[in-house]
Length: 238
Image 1 (cartoon, rainbow, N blue to C red):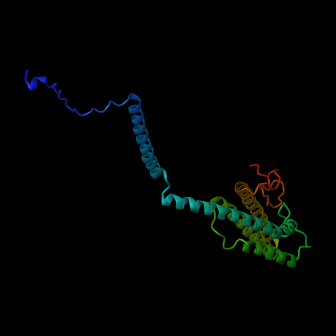
Image 2 (image 1 turned 180 degrees about the vertical axis):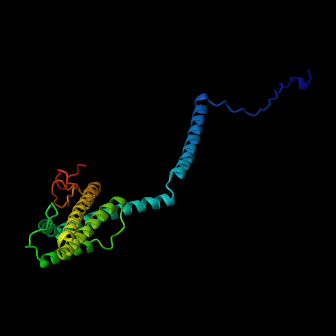
C-alpha cells in the first residue's frame, strides 16, 4: 500500500449557519397582548381627545354661563333691595290708607269734617315719597321687574287717589259725590295692584332662597285684592 493509503482519511465538515429556534407559543402570546394593549391605549387617547374636543364648552358658551351666573347673583341682590323698599313704602302708605278710610267710607260718601287740609297735605307728601322711591328702577329678571313695576304702579295710583280726593273737597253737590266715588275706586285699584306686586315679590323671594316675604297692605273684605298666604315669614314652602 502507498503512503497515502496508510493516512487516516480526513472527514470534511461543512459549517452551516444556525437557524433561530422557533418562538415559544407563550412568548408570542405576550408579544401580541402587549401590542393589543398599546393599540387600545393609543385608541383610547385619540378617542378621548376627540370627545373632549367635541363636548368642551366653546368660548361663547362659557361666556353665556358666566353672564347667567352674574345675572342670577345681581337679581338676588335686587330682590333683597326691592323687598326692603317695599317694606319702607308700606310704612309710608299706611297713614295714607288710614286717612283715606276716614275720608272715603266704603259707600263712597263724604268722610267726617275732622279731615283737615293739613292731613291731606301729609298724605300727598307721603304718597309722593312712595312714588319717588321707585324712580330710576334697575333692570332685572322678568319676575323681579313685574314685582317692582306693580308696586311702583300702585304707589302712583295712591298718589292719584289723594289728588282726586283733594279736588273733591273743593266741589259741592253731585260733582263732589262723583269725585269722591272716583277716588274710592282709585283706592281700590291701587290696593289691588299693590297686592299683585306683593304676591310677585313673595314668589321671587322664595325662588331666590329668602323664603316667604309678605309685604301686603291691609284690605277690607270684598275689595278683591290678593291676600298673603298662611306660610310664616322666611319659610321656603311654595
